[in-house]
Image (cartoon, rainbow over all chains, first blue to last red; front, top):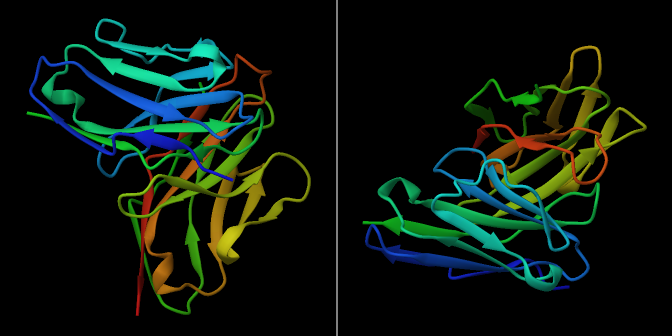
Length: 112
Length: 116
């Protein structure tokens, strides 16, 4: 069984530029999460989807971050414009309800 | 408010010795508790979970954790540490609310160093 796939693995951009991250969850998992992880810290939830519905986006900075999960499968997280403080690892995870989360390898974003 | 605490930033243990990584939580109702491990440049990997039942939960790679309701703790343990266990460990708690309303929170992590 394939795991959670994320791309790109690494991204370097100039501040004020846009950037997008893509996630393909494990087949059949209805719940998809996007997290931000700073070095040596725990993941912080940005948004959680149940199928195609965003059920928790309270921590998503909506002035510059957006996300979508079309057809309840793949998801894209976008930042526009990026700021220096957005440099971090962006993790995608998926799960079946009540079960453990399966994480992708993450996208390491560096904003210069 | 729901929260999870990992009081130790780092735990050092000699190879072959038992290890404990501590986690305490605060949540309304009966919590769902999880442990994850993260190796360098990798995503988090699930180790074990407690939802209901036996307070001692066994998981991957010889790890186990004990749910203690009175102390609101869910400490991770292993009888004999390996150098390869060196990694970053995260405790996570989910409240038992129904789908759509639950909150899932991770601790700040504990770095485990197993010394040869």
